[in-house]
Length: 117
Image (tube, rainbow, N blue to C red; front, side, top):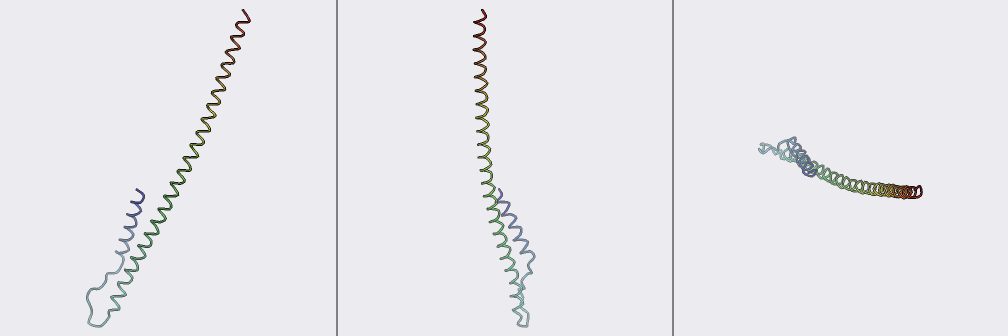
């Protein structure tokens, strides 16, 4: 989804670059001024090349950010899982300790009950 957004933004920039470029003259004047038409088309080509380069650079940055975000997410999930396992183990140990204490108390009360008779 992010790649689709990045590509549409890049397309928007490219189209804006083409829209701002001056239109090339198609009529040739009587005087040999062909250099004017070549200089007119050169900035449009240069702008298109620059826009494409910016688009590719933005795509590369976006891809790097996505990869980094995925790696960070994986690391965070692993840390959370490790923390959950640790707390789960502590909870089990605590519960086992309480069960053992309860059994011990139960045995003590049974012993007390049999000795007081």
